[in-house]
Image (tube, rainbow, N blue to C red):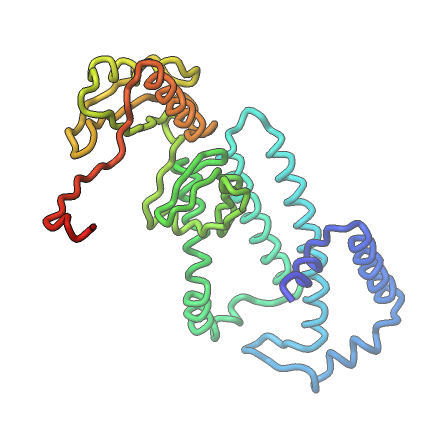
Length: 320
């Protein structure tokens, strides 16, 4: 049903648009020639009408409203889409500002269209005050989440904390690039190629990590252990060299290696090095540096130990 209404108000295919134009033109022509007068008089009779205050409503008014709304929203949709494409083609405006301008224009256009429909139908807004309290409460509860997501989207656009192209990580583990900030949700493309629709409210109420908010650099951490008896100065130098030789390793901050622990089976080091653009990925440089460390350790006979345990038997004769 939702797809049908969407295709009715905003038809995409040219065949649907052509059929909609023919239907509207046909009804307008029949109405102008007077062929629809009997139907209008019948639907506008007292049997199919009721009053709210001083305003009279009838089945004819309802049918007329449906056609006017479809026609108006169709024209407004075309106008909104045209303006949206025009604004998106502007190169001097940032993507977040483009989205904000588009939202403001769409809100104004649809609000004016709503007022225009009421004016054409001759509906006085004061006649609806009887139901304004109950309807307002019902709509408020029903559209609470929608309104919250809409306002949250506007806040995001003003704050520019999450913009198109940013690499973000949500507190539920979703990691991906922001592709679009809509009225209700933000579309994120994950590393697996999936598109996830995240409500805008989640970006306001939950913790969000933006890897590219103020800068795109990031630190890569590698933990590695060597066997007891190893020349620790040599091992530390080889680990740093493996990072510095990688083309994506930044010179500032420089790569650093720290001795962190004398463990049961190994002496543990931690390597820190920075890469420039996190959007290009962190796994590849980490993997390349690990391969380089493995090769350098092999060339200098440095052993990477594995956990070892000594077993003492109190009764070794039982094994015989």
